[in-house]
Structure formats: structure tokens, C-alpha cells
Length: 432
Image (cartoon, rainbow, N blue to C red; front, side, top):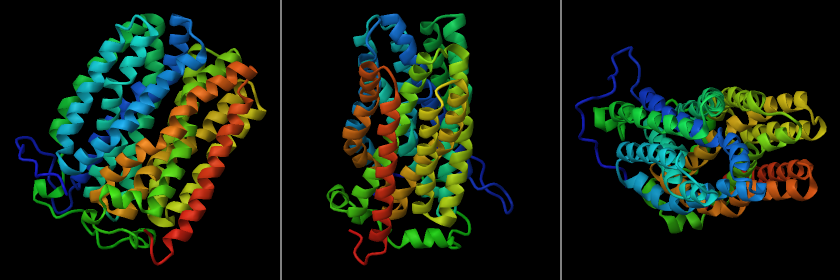
């Protein structure tokens, strides 16, 4: 079931002229802004938070990394409900609620007095914000506005996270050092509230809200889009029980879960690995900025290539970049190795979210994206929720991150196997 038409048309995105911009690109801009906030203040700054909270609370790294676990578990458990709401209610309103939750969460986090308080915020308000302004609503909304250039649009939307990763961690690091971490989080929360008017002005639930029938020239699909579309059927045919019976759905879960485990785990632990090598402060922030810059290019490139080469080949490319970056970090344990590893891994990071969000859109239809991604998230928990704490445990017990790099290399291999099996399933007569 699609969301109801948006009746709040007092302020609307620019409407297209004969040679004007398609309003869907304003949707890409707005959803990209949401991912900038989510990525910059949450995921890309995770390493800064873990390193800071280790010093503030003096807890073992395994406990510090439970921050990531709280976020992952809460997000994944809530995502099926969020997915249903995204497919049935106003995404515009949901994203405004999510941005308010994110801002409030950062403000409350700034007043945390114990590690338990930090866990509580990362298990409640922050996950709500992540769910409602992040990849799932963005993918669902963009998929409604684009068909022929869906991969490119999803890739560009995901670049918002990379822009946030480039801009926000250095800014947060500066505020942490020049002021203090509490003041920095208050500023971050206020920024979130300032973005809400952008959502109100630019977001619309579907083209019909502006009197449009959809993307111009949508019938001129690329060869890869036509191939992937052979398994796409109407959203009404894909209820949650149907999704859980689909082989394609489970393969997508394995592929995306394995790759997300690598990206989330390394974002939380790269700063700790750098700290072990004597690298701190702005030098560590530079690593995240490099990943973010390369991720920006990787997202746009992956989105562009998925419309032409298909999902499977792009997935192999993502696995190759991630595993190569891990190998560099394993073999070159110095600052030069950190820089090189961040560069190569960043290209792989960029492809993970477009790959994850494009697979359900191609397989199950734009109207099912929210449900598919929402149901998929809880199934990621055994992989993603244990990723960062397990990495911290391995580091605590072995004194190095070598075992962590091997573990994440295995996740890349598992994703590649899933992509290979998925290709054979896609060519089978019965894809369910």
C-alpha cells in the first residue's frame, strides 16, 4: 500500500518546466541531507565517541563498543515497524519526526553522567532518528520517484553520508578539543533541529503529490535495470510472510549483513587501532575524512554502474575494495598503512549502502522497499550487533587487530558467495 497523498502543498519543490529539473532530484537532495546528519553525527563520528568515552569513563573497550551494539540491536528491532510505516504513512512526516528524535538524542547524550546513560541514549532516541532519516526511508522515497536512473539516484542520496563523514568528524574533533564533548553534542543537536525545515519544504511522498506521473523517460530502462526488473512484482504481492519465504530476500540479507558488519565494525574500531599505533586527534580524524571522500566517489560510481552492469558485478567490486583495504591494514601497521587502507576501504564503503538499498527495490518493487529493508534489519542482528564488540574483545585479548582484519575479510568472502548464489537464483524460473 502506498502512502497517502501529501496535502501540505503550501511550500513545494520547484516544478519541472520543459527543460527544467525533475523534482525528484530535490528529493535526492533532501534525503541526502538526512543521511549527512545521520552519517556525520552517528556513524562517521563513532570512532571519536568510543575513544572519548574510553577516556571519560575508563571502561574496557568491549564495554565501550556496546554503544554500537545498543544502536544496532535497537535499530534492527524497530525497523520492521518503521518499514511498515514507511510503506503506508507519510515518509515526509516520518523523516521530520526522525530528525527531531536525532536532535533530542544528541542533546540528552550531552548530559550523560555514566556509561549506562550513554547506552540508554544509543538504544532509544538515536536509533529512532537513524531509522527515520536514514537509508530505509530514503531508499523507499527515492525509489518512488525514479525508475530508469534509480541506481544513480540512490547512489547520490547515499553520498550525503560521505559528505557528512568528510565535514563533521573534523568539526566534532575540533569542538571536542577546543571546548568539550558535552558542548559539541549540544551544537550537534541544534543542527539537527535546523534541518527540519528543509524536510518540510522539499520532501513529498510521491510524484502524484505534485501532479506528476513519475520520472521522465522512465520507459527507456537500461539493460541492467531490465534484467533486474524481471524479478520485480507489485508491492501488494510482497507481504512480510512472502518476503520471509523468498530465497532472494534471504540472500540479500546475508550479503548486506556481512558487508554492514565490516563497515560498522571498522568505523567503531579504526580509531582504536590507530590509537594502538600512536595516532590520535586530528590525525585520526583525517582517516575518517579520507574514507568519507572515497566513499562519496564510491557511492556515486556504484549507483551509476548498477544501472548498467547490474547488482552482482557491483557487489563483487565492493567486496574487492573492502578486502583489499583490510589486507593493507593488516600488512602495513603504521600511519602510511592507515592512510592507504582508509583510501581503499573508503571506495568499498561507498558501495555498501547503494547495494543494500537497491537490491530490494529491484527484486520486490518500489512499494515494498520499506517492508523489505525493515524486515531485513532484525535478521542482521546476529552479524552486525556482535561485530564491533567482538572486534574489541579480540583486540583486548590478543593485543592487536590482526584477528579482526581476518574476521572481516571472511565477511567479505561470505558476501561474495551470497552474490554468486543470488545470480543463479535470479536466472531461475521461480525466484521465490
